[in-house]
Image (cartoon, rainbow, N blue to C red):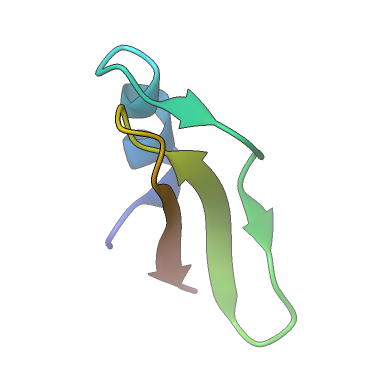
Length: 48
């Protein structure tokens, strides 16, 4: 995904839930955890 922060901003307006903010991981990825409208857990991941 090219921009985790932009995708994260769209989660709630589209009926999902942001369960964490975006964080930079030491292995070179930016990651956010969300739930889709059906309650499925989804990780948004971007290479840094």
